[in-house]
Length: 239
Image 1 (tube, rainbow, N blue to C red):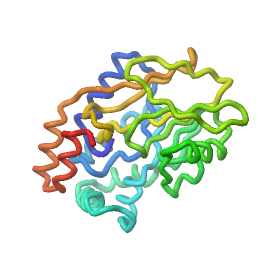
Image 2: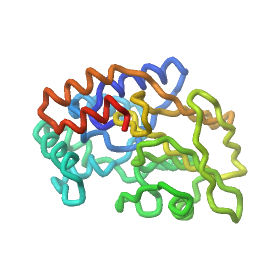
Image 3: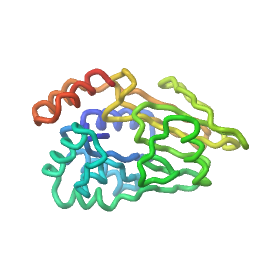
Image 4: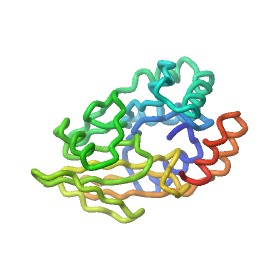
């Protein structure tokens, strides 16, 4: 979500139109964007109704005040974010787990390989290491800002697949699956449209979605907040 209220609201409205009956938020509620408080409050409302929510590295950095591993713009956004959250919102972030398991599904921000190391799953080797650390049939992750789906059959290395928005993908349970949903609040694959996905595990389908939203308004808020200009550019260009 990255504190992008416009993107989050657009995705939630889109998912409601798709008829979803539950939500999972894969971390990084804050960082980069200009609406950390409203985003945390909105996600907390869904969590109170049973949504799965996991801790992201930007959430953790906000709680801990530790930005040593972050680049300049990210660190500046975290420092700014810490001044915009109240005690209740910080406590919500601090209480988030690194992983959530629901039946045969694991939710994690980065990788099940070592959730607190914030490993980027960007290739089949890292996908293999992620899946090797869990028995879950389906793993849903964030962290990487571009959507991708890995699938694996017994004894083979995961194969990456680039999904087409809006096209249901069969995800039968005789294989294992690692879905990286992309970023709702800061996509980086050349499209400014927000990312989300719908899993219908009763029918064994997964559909990735791109949701247009008012990214110019979100970018304007970033500039008005005095956050680094590069963060506004990313929203406008999707890179």
